[in-house]
Length: 225
Image 1 (spheres, rainbow, N blue to C red):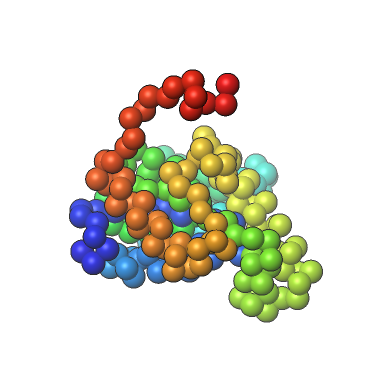
Image 2: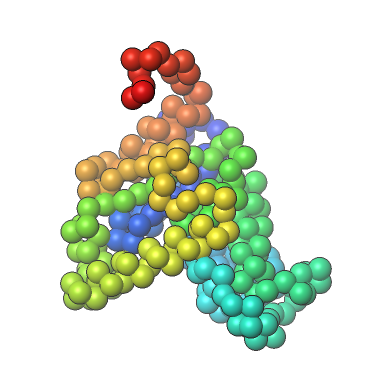
């Protein structure tokens, strides 16, 4: 493999709005010769579950809704598993994406962007989890260019998107969104650029796949105590 990585590799990317996480995910997929799933996961989950694309899209990376809202939206559910008929719609959608992520990861290497994929695949030895951030200015400029927004609206977009992603991740996983200990690797795209960030992730993945670790023994001099 051109990347220098033997065997299957699954990269799960968490990202702040404007950090370029999806772009970096697509770059990694191209380098690895695999598929990248961000919003693309919607159609896969819909096909596997019987839920329509619109329903899954309306709940995509969104925190849990009220029970009343779920009951109303439940009337649009078609062809889904009978044992989940009493499950709120937002949980059905999460489970549909959960099963789609599991299925895709079992079939081949791939890159997932968001959707709690790192939590879903936490026991997979071939998985590397990454969180990508960037400087405030770089994030604002990226969102302004990507969504054709002025500066004030771009800042508001970033805040609302990150708040939504954080609530989604924190409510469905046993981890905290953006917290370093929740991931294998955290990177600042502003420090490395898009290409450099992608290469850093691949370099880390090579080391993890090879099982290279420093001895896990600390002396008193190594600690802050």
